[in-house]
Structures are given as C-alpha cells and as structure tokens.
Length: 136
Image 1 (tube, rainbow, N blue to C red):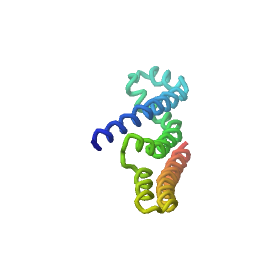
Image 2: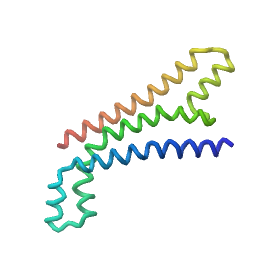
Image 3: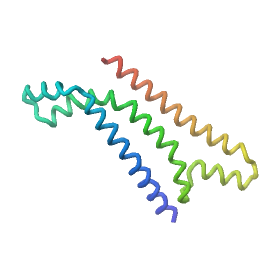
Image 4: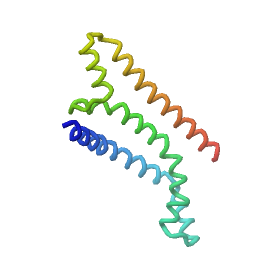
C-alpha cells in the first residue's frame, strides 16, 4: 500500500541522511578548540552546561553550512523513492508525461520546482550564515 511504501521511503532516507548529519555534528563539535571545554570545566561548569552554553553555540557556526547542504541533498535525493512507488515530484511528472504525451513540459515544471526549493533554501541559509558571521 502507499502508506507502507511512504514509511519505507522515509526510513531509507532517514538512515542514509542520519549518518551524514551525525558526522556533520560530530565534526562541528570537534572543530571547537579543546581549550573552550577546559576553560568551562576549570570554572566548575558541569559537562552538560559546558556543551549547552559554550561548545554547541560555537559548533553551530561550523555545522550550519554543511547541515544546510545536507538538507538540500535530501530534497534532491527524495526523487529516488519513486523507485519503490512513492508518488513524489518526478514520479508525478513522468505520470503526466505518459498521460498527455507531452515529453518536455512536465520535466521543466519539475525542474523549476526543485530549483525553487533548493535555491530559496540556499539563499535562506546564506542569510542565516551571514547574520551569524556578523556576531563574530
């Protein structure tokens, strides 16, 4: 059924992307200088508060660009779930092509939608990154 295929598609995309996101976050946290944690701990801050108030805010600036790119990749890769029968954008474009015998226009519309999604998300991330770099 469509519901089971949808769940399978979400699980597959989540597992695949989850590994990348975990690595992005790990690398962002490790990019923060060790002296930051040492300074927080020497002031008597517990580990959890040190992470929450000192390490994570600094790591977020390192994480955001790569995380934004990963979200854009997820949008682009979501078309692969059409292989298991999920009715997503490219699947619907191909259905329209088959029903109307118009070969190019549905693909142009789908490409425009993908472009609008990825371009607007890229611009939004650029604005957020710009605001964060101003705070440095």
